[in-house]
Amino acid sequence: MAKKKVTLKISRNETWYPEIEVDDHLTDEEILDMVVNGDHEDDDRIYDDYQNKRTYDADTYTKIDKGEE
Image 1 (cartoon, rainbow, N blue to C red):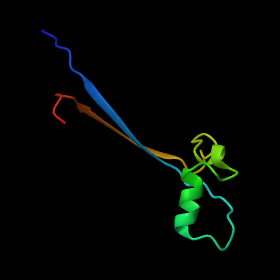
Image 2: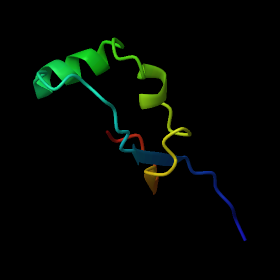
Image 3: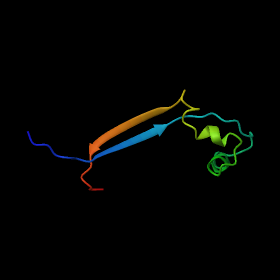
Image 4: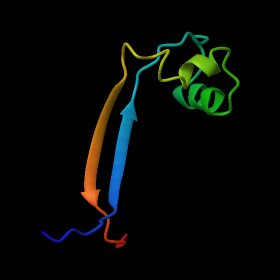
């Protein structure tokens, strides 16, 4: 039987839900700015999927890549 090579595209959507403490007066926008800019004291833990494994979830998708995107 003949064989052929195909290229697979593997995509993963990862989600986790770290909880952090922030000053009560901060708005949602200020909190996001602080976290995204790396100014929160728990910055390393926030983006570490292993340290957030209790809330970690991943969806993995596989398809044949025909170079069309």
